[in-house]
Each structure stands twice: as C-alpha cells, then as structure tokens.
Image 1 (tube, helix red, strand yellow):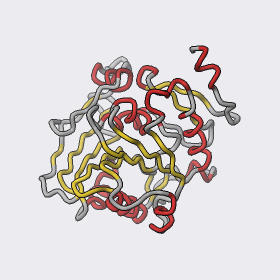
Image 2: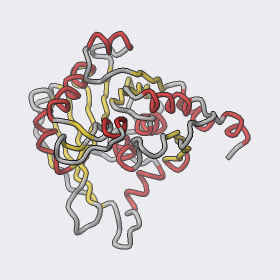
Image 3: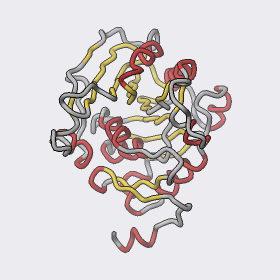
Image 4: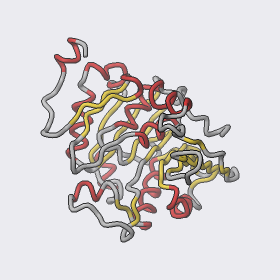
Length: 269
C-alpha cells in the first residue's frame, strides 16, 4: 500500500473491510458480517459494458459501489451514479471515493441515497430525473419472497429478497431513468429468469442472455442479461460460459474479467 493511500484511509466502521477488485484498479470499502457484500456478480455485471461506454451510467441497488466503481475504472468516458437506500452502504461508497487508490475515477462517480421503488417525486428530489441515464446496471435482490428463509438482519434481508411485484417496480424505475434506446444490464439468478423476462416485456427489447456455469458439468446459477429500451430486436440466448476449471481455478476468460478488467462482448456473444 502506498504512503498516499495510507494517508487517505478513512476510519472504517467496525467489521468493515477494504477489498481490491480488477487487480487493484478498484478499492471498495464493504460492510462486515450481516450485510450484503459484493463480489463476482458485481464485476461480471460491470463487464457487460464496453470500455468505450460513455454518458451517464446509473447503478441501481449499488450497495457500497463495487459494480459502479468497476464501470468507472474500465470506461474512462462514463459518469456513474450509485443509487441505494442503505445509508451504511452509501456511506462506505462515499468513503471509498475519497481513497487515493480510486483517484483515477472518483471525480466521475456520485452517490444518491434514495428508495428505488418509492414515489418518483422522492427520487427526483434526490437527483434522479427522467431520461438522465444512457445506461442502467443493476444487481437487484435476487431471492424470491417466500422461497427462502429471510435473514433476521433487516438490511441483509432487504438486499437479498425481492418479490415479482418489486422486480417490476425496479424495471419501471429503470425505464423511466433511461433515454430512448438506452441500455440495461442485469445480473440475476438463472432459476428466476422467467420472472426477469416478464418484467422486461413491453419495456425492453434486443434482450441477450448469457448463462454463467460454475463448472462445465453444472447448471448455470447466474445469467447476465442486456436489453435496450424500446428496441424491437429479437431475443438471443448466448452460449453459456464456464467460470471454473475442474480443479477449482477460474478459467482464463474469467481471470481476464475479474483481474484484468476485460469486457464481455454481449453484442457478439
């Protein structure tokens, strides 16, 4: 760690950690046990955007900012707005932006603390206006309400449990924020793909789905989904990608994404 980095280190809340992503190009401050922590899903989500992405990228449900930070680090022409209603996660994102490690992109990232599915007037008052975004990315809460035992920790439960009705509200917010033809990227559990496609229907087209398999002989657990507001382009199911070799090590393509900041060309598959 450099002297400059040490000098700028904030005093972290108890249990919070300092975590490096993209081979050290990004430093995130994340909450400790009992709250949602970002990892592979967030980095893969960011990789759905190309390095030449520009304009405003809104990260809905940004948590402590890992996915949005990775977008900003990979796409130097992009401005990123992190949106979350968790004051602890939002505070950690702001603290991380003050780190010397993140100076290369911190000036292009802002944090908005508001309710994604609340009244639009509340979001507008917080700075989220209609058609402000060229791209929206999101890693929504992914567990289906009633299918799993929610965490007794309210903050952790809110970050992991989502009804189909609330998923529809997330998409309603996304489509409101996007310019016509704006792009959407989502990381989502494969088992709930039908619910996501239902929420996209009538709002987005040109949908591409990339399944992510933990191993070559296992079903996909996650999907990366991209779409365009108002597009009439056909649906595409892309060839799935395998994350790990048989020995548990990441495959070469996954290492390139996670450590080197490589992108996933969802347009070509």
